Length: 108
Length: 118
Image 1 (tube, rainbow over the protein chains, first blue to last red):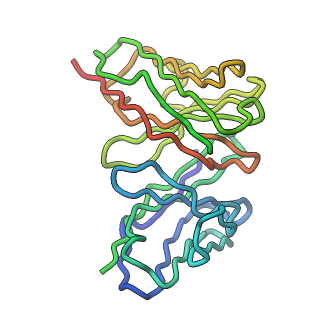
Image 2 (image 1 turned 45 degrees about the vertical axis):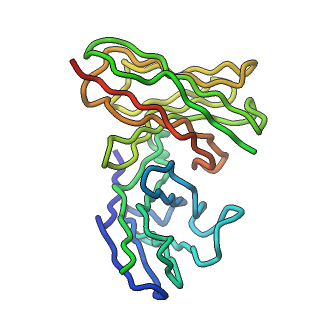
C-alpha cells in the first residue's frame, strides 16, 4: 500500500514561514491535499489539488508538489496556526485514500 | 451550510456489532461520494471506507474489509457504517466526510466515538 511520510513535528517562530513536508514515491505524479486539525476539533481542509485553497482559508496557506515531496507552506505564522497537519492522496492502484502520519506545528 | 452529524457510537464488547449513522444536510446528498475516516485518540487519521453516490463503487481499508459494511440511503440523506466482529483496535473517533470529484474530503462531521472493550 502507498505510504506517506511526514515529520512528527515542526516548530516555527511567529511571523516566520513554516514548511511541512509529505514524502511519497513519485507523489508529484498525483495531487495532494492538506488538512488542519486543532485539539478537540474535526479536521479542516486547507489546501486541495496541491495548491488550491477552499473559501475562507487565508492566502498564507500554500502548497507545492513535485518529485517525491509535497510541501504545505504557512507564511507569517500566527499562534492560531498551531495544530496537527495531515497530507492525503488518492492511491489509484487500490482506489483508497491515504493519509500521512501527521505533523504537529508548534508556534514558539 | 453543510452539516454532517454522526451518531450510533458507544461502548461495545469485542466481537459485537455496532451501526453508525451520518445525517447530511446543506448539499445535494445524492450528487456526492461519502466516506468514513477514523482516528484513534492521540493518533493520526485513517480512511475506513467510501461509497459513490450511486453505490456502484465501494471501498474499504484492508484493516476493516470483511468486517465493516458501508451503505447509504439517498432518500434519507444518510450514510451508514455497519461494524461487525469489532476488535479493541477499532476503538476510535469515526468521522463522516463528504467526498469530492478530486478524491479529497471537503466537509467533516464532529465524529462519533466507538470504544471496544470488555
